[in-house]
Image (cartoon, rainbow, N blue to C red; front, top):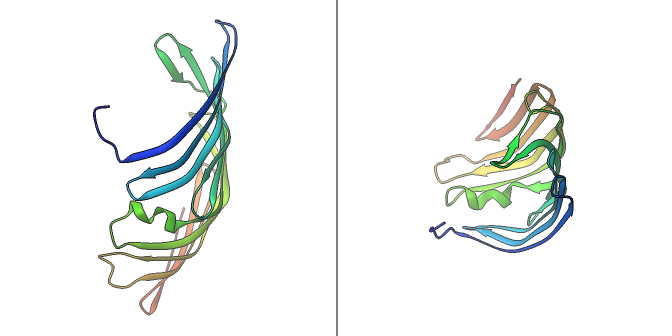
Length: 187
């Protein structure tokens, strides 16, 4: 790219090509180890990518962080032409599972002096079409704290619940700051 990006990792890939010239099928087992971006470290990212002329899929996707992991999978319809790969409208499917993710893993992405903690658990599923996705599931944040270089009063006891159903999202939050409580909800 001509630019020195602050990214490093060990990369391994095993590509399987099958089918015919008119009906190719690809499967790639991909692993990134020790991904470093500035001060952020991600121990491992892995997954299986399947592709043919009609769909692109990620199976058994896993992002392992210092504390916790995220599991991912998904399928989207594509059209493979001589000019490249194009997303097309059609059935989609996907899932994301947050398994004991710790917000402190994201602290290196925030301004220097920021401290953030908390655990995220839950799962979200996607179905429907690319033009009309249908999301369902819940994600919960527990035991959260936040303090930053501009924050005079640390925020503690952060709890948040995000629930998704069809085309509606509900967020309910609660936190403590100073001597008071902050509570909010949104649809």
